[in-house]
Structures are given as C-alpha cells and as structure tokens.
Amino acid sequence: MSFSKNSTIAAIATAHGLGSVSIVRVSGEKALEISLKLTKKNTLKPRHATLCEVFCGGEFLDEAILIYFKAPNSFTGEDIVEFQTHGGFVISNMILNELLRLGVVLAQPGEFSKRAFLNGKLDLAKANAITAIINSRSEGAAKILARQMRGELGRYTDEIRAELVRTLAYVETSIDYADDDLPSDLLGSIKNMLSQNSQKLDKMVAISKERRGLIDGFKIAIVGKPNVGKSSILNALLKFERAIVSNEAGTTRDTIEEGLKIGTHLVKIIDTAGIRSGAGAVEEIGISYSLRAIDEADIIVAVFDGSEVADEGDKRILSLLDGLDKKLFFVLNKSDLGVRFDINLNEPIKICAKNGVDELVNEIENFLNTQDTNEIMLSSLAQIRACEAASGALKRAFLLLDESEIELFAYEINLAIKEIASITRPLEYSEVLDEMFLNFCLGK
Image (cartoon, rainbow, N blue to C red; front, side):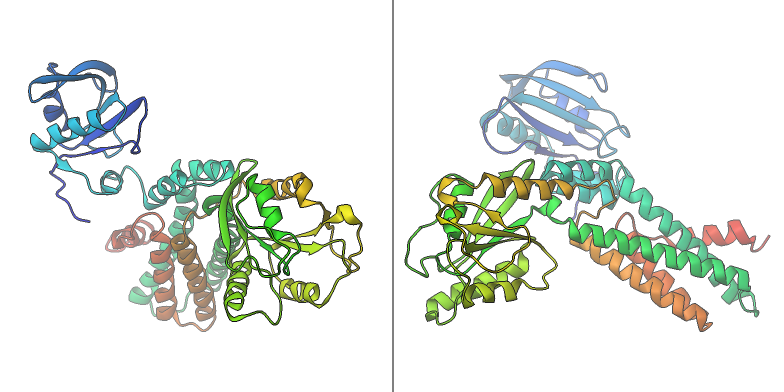
C-alpha cells in the first residue's frame, strides 16, 4: 500500500448493511475545508457534535451529525471529520461520492491506521490489537485486546527493548574504545538480564499459544469410531439437524464444521468421520481428515458407546489421543441403556445425546472460562514468532558472552532488539547512539 501523506482520504467506517447510523470518515489536511462544502456551515467546533444539513450537487440530501477532530488530537494525527448519517447503502455512498468529486481520495484498506502509525498515534502492537479485537471470539479476548490498545504489550516489550539497547550500547562502546575485557560484575548483571528477559519472552509465548483460542476461537473436534453418536451430539449442540444420523457405519465421510456460542465464547465444532480399520477408499479420505482435525483442534470430545463393551476400535481411538497436549473430554453416549463400557476413563461424561447434552456443554464452558487470563498475551502469530526468535537470540548471546565472543554477542543482541521492535516500532540506531553518549560521555 502506498499513498501521499498530503492527500485527504475518505471511507465509509461502518460495516455494509442496513442500520440506524452510517459513518463516513475524512482525514487529511483538507478534511475540514472539503467537508464544509457539503454543508452551509462556515466552520465546526472541534470535538463537538454539530447537526448539519448535508447537500450533494447543491441538493439537500440528509441531516447528519458532523464531528471535527483537529490535528493532532485525532486517531490519525491529522484533521478528521466524521459524517454520522442515517444508515443504509444510499446516503453514505452519495456523501462519499460527493467528497471524491471534490478532490478527496478513496482510502485504501487499513490506511487510516497506517497514517496513525506513521504519525506516532499508535504503535504496531496497538494496530494489531485493533484488527484482532474486531475479530475476537470471546469476551476474554476483547478484554485482553483492550489492554493492548491501551499500550500494555507495548510498554512490556519496550522495557525489554530498553534493557537490550543499553546493553548493546555499552558492549559496542567497549568494542570500539577499550582493549580490556568487560568487568566480571558487569558480565554477571548482563547474563542475569539476558536470562530474565528470555524467560519473560518464553512465558508470554507459552501463554499466547495455550490460549490462542481466546482470540481466534477454540476448535473442538468430536472424534470416535463409527456409530457412537458423534453426529447426534453435534446436532444436539447446534439444536438443529446439521448432520445425517444413521445406524449405517461410515455415514459421515467428511468433517462438518459449524460455529457455536458456548457461554461468552464463540467456538468451532468439528464433527469427524468415524475412525475404523478396513474402511473403503472414500471413507479413508474422511478418516484422514479426522486425524488432521485432531491435530488442529484445541479441545477433543472423544465419544464412546457407553452401552457396549469396549472393542479394538475404542482402543484405537484412545491410542490416538494418548499423549496429546490438549484438553480431552471423554463422553459415554447412550448411557440411558446402561453402562457396559469397561475401560477406565478420566471423569467420563455420561449422556444420551437424544435427551440433550447440557452436562457436556457445562463442562466445556467451565473449561473455556478458565482460559481467561490477566497475563500479557500476543495477538498474532507474527508476534509469537518474533518473541520466539528474540528469546533464541538472547540464549545464544548468553553462551557467546561466556566465550568472550563480544562481536557475535552484539550481533545476537541486535537481532533480538529488531525482533522485539517488530512488535511495536522499528529500531532506530539513534537509540543506541543516545545511550552511548548519555551513559558513557563519548567525546565529552
């Protein structure tokens, strides 16, 4: 994406569709001047809602509320005018077209946020949080991302970054201006700093991976051998007949995915093909999809026929799940016919899918609620990878310090800083120079 910082841009800021209010946002040096041409006003008082008649081509169009945000006190750091019109497709599009006719440029996707970043109004962490909060799948995610929008993640990573920049400044000064080795007490404090910050990054990565479903939505896979009632459980969860239910083995030959709200969480339920030996070619493809669903899911609902003695098919399911680092719920379906299943399962949930699955829903909801956290989380895979790379660089730097490889040590610290900087704002070498002159008085 490229644009001229001197251009004035506009876009409809509300989602497409019918509604009571639609917002057209204008940002740039001429935002106020051009917006006023659509009204009979001479000016607008900053940060006040003003009821205006709006005209297009000289003809009255609508009454709208206009709000003027004077630079730099706006989202983008530029002059912004917002038209709050009556909702629907027509009015807002006519206003937008009139603005374009008067010289405004149609904004590209994300351009308002990009201008806010370039003008120092938000960092990359806040920008990522804005995107993620729009797509958040739970109330817990919204709370976590709201804290990021207030700068919590940026402050946390900036503290680590500042310590690394100070260390890099001292080490590069030592390389350039001293022949002696680093003092032993300084070596000890640097190694302690490296270890602590690597642990902080590792902890943040682990929490973010474990609770990724809070932001993306948890995936729940229903697995089991054929004819244990997986599709009946899916239908009961959704409260409508989504999957075909039959006594014939292999009826479900593909994965079926549906969205569902459990408590305050939006989740994806995946009904899988029954896993068994000796299936036909087409059914085997479905089984391969089932195995992939197990691998990708955050939560596994393993279903067994509670009215039957366990067989080799049940044992195969349990062997596939053995050792998985995922939350497992064991369900004994058809328990209304009496429980004959003879393998000891961990806290099995006994249900009859035809009579309802409330107990299973309650257990899943209780688990999902435990995933809410006050810890700092990363909102994107790019942030997770950056922290993993930074932590790896710090670990390598720790070893290089023991070997007195100062130049290579400085390289790894540089790498760690750049990875962390990708979360908030790019590294400028002036930061290192500032530390060198501030703390070490070079050229005094």
